[in-house]
Image (cartoon, one colour):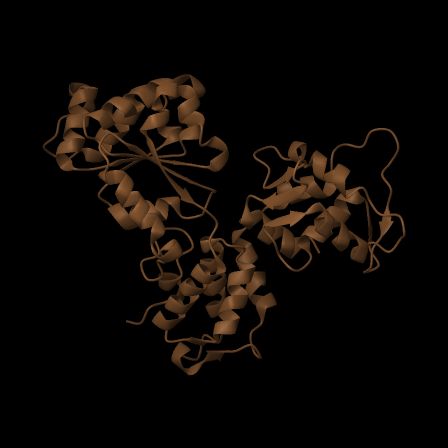
Length: 366
């Protein structure tokens, strides 16, 4: 049977048919080099949804133990969860196995332990877990810790003598060229002719996120006629409807709560905020202006204050311009969890941390 778009473009899980190694396979090489060093704990660092788990799945397949930080409730949870995944009809329960025996069993089986989201481990347990990882690695057990950049120092902070034990692999946001490869591989698997300039538009709109690229490619297939085989259809710059694709793709990325928080701004105190007339006839305060300039073209992942002000000048009709700098300084306290955008007052630079939020903002913020 021919492949379906859902089989080719996998938005959650391992993309068997459209796996692309970033930067020509650099990350795979670095991970293997780290694993080859005795007593090292490999630390894979990258923002959410940049492909850390997918990288491990490529190297290990299912031949690994995966433990998430939220499963570690006490200092023995890591090993009880590892043993649970090892169990077979002939093994006894974890209660009859010490931590050392579980480590020996893992080493004997040659299975690495992948610890995802270490920052979810309770702070009071992190030190003990780090010491256990250090001792297990010294005995030959391979450990891979997945973490986000703002949490990368947690293990070191919890146990300072761990700092020399890590081999770091940095998974950055993807290049547009690597994202293009996802489209080229995937559409070919479906025998669907999609012009390369269309694929490049998708890569630009994917905001350097492989998951977003998979979603946009999938929805590109879904907007086509279901009654005509893909091999008899063609997507060109002339018939490609990006808006329809985005209308479908946004269903997978609902960030209405953080967007509303940004749009509403902090609670007003004292005098009400100034209201500005906008070029499209609408009105809004400084936070509404901020959302709209973030949503305007071209997309970015990093932008300077001067460029933001230039965008505001094109959007706001009145001669008086809103205080964008003040609004940017307030953004950290507008979100309940880690802000999806980060303002650096020293560099006067705004950075998108979560491309999925930014995709939603670009769709809903205009």
